[in-house]
Image (cartoon, rainbow, N blue to C red; front, top):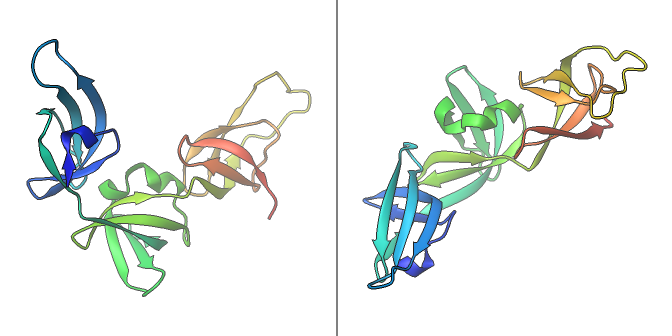
Length: 187
C-alpha cells in the first residue's frame, strides 16, 4: 500500500482495478493548506493517459505485476509469439502491446514481458541488440567529413544512421533505448 508521499515518476499503482504508471510527477506546496501531488497517469493495458491531483494522506494499492523472461519466437503479422524460457508456455501479444520494440525484435531475442493478472501487457528489451545490416549505401573513399553518417536498414526493417565505414552484411550493436548505432560486432 502506497501513500501520496510515495508517489514518483515510474511508480506503478492500481486504480479501479487497472495498472497505471506515473509518467509525470509534480509536488505542489501551496502557502496555505495541504500539499498537492499532480500526476500524469498512463493505463498500462489500454495506453490511455490522464492527469490527476492527489492530496497528502491518500492511499494507493500496488499494481499486481509480474515480469517474466521470455524468448521472442515469431510474428504472424498481427500477433507476436513469446515463449517462457522456464516452462515453455507460449504467450501472444498484439502489435500495439509490442509498440516500438518491434523495430529491434528478431527471432530468439530474450526479453522481459510484463504481466497483469496473467495477461501480457508490456515488453522491455535488453539495452543492446545485435542486428545485421541488410541495406546500406557503399562508402566512397575520402568521404570522411567529420560527423558524417549514412542511413542503413537492419534485418528487422528499422532504419538508422551509421558511420560511413559500416557496410552491408555487417553485424552492428544498437542501443534499444535511443535507437542509435553503438559499434560494429564481430561474428
